[in-house]
Image 1 (cartoon, rainbow, N blue to C red):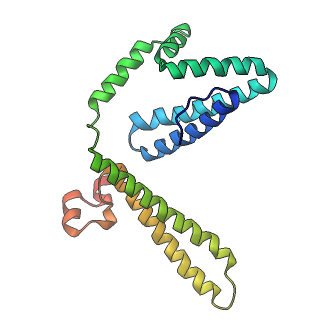
Image 2 (spheres, one colour):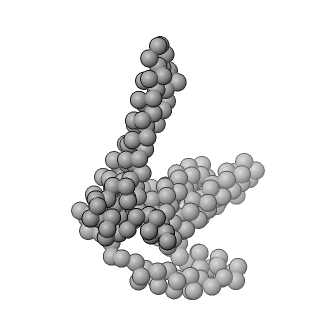
Image 3 (cartoon, rainbow, N blue to C red):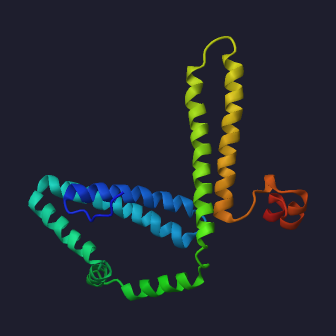
Length: 202
């Protein structure tokens, strides 16, 4: 993977769409953390809008699109996104300083970043969940090709595996999102300590 800054309208469209998809994935990973979920959702939406806008501009005014791409390239390469964003916010009568202060307050409330070993474990478990999900998807795709007298029995067995794979992936993602073991996997002692879903809801 390269980290070069795009410098053409087409390159910016591709990069924005790619990073928009990544932002959407990050939003899903942080579904229980509003401070991380919402900015990533908004980033994904902004990337989608910007990609469409640049693509449309390039179709109708290639010179203007090239000039925009060149300006964006210079801003990003200089590492000064805050300046242009602040100027744009001020021009539209928004309080960028308030946004920065809000961000710093959120940052102060957040837990410290996990050590490298924890981050590595988190990444490994996320990959494991993705593999369980892929296995479930593959089993599902194979169902349509089953034939013969035992097809229904094999399909029932495959559906049970699909449920097992999907449940394993969901459990892993739940642990990563909440830091807690799902209730249906807790021991009796853990249930006494944390309570059942019904008890917690009452």
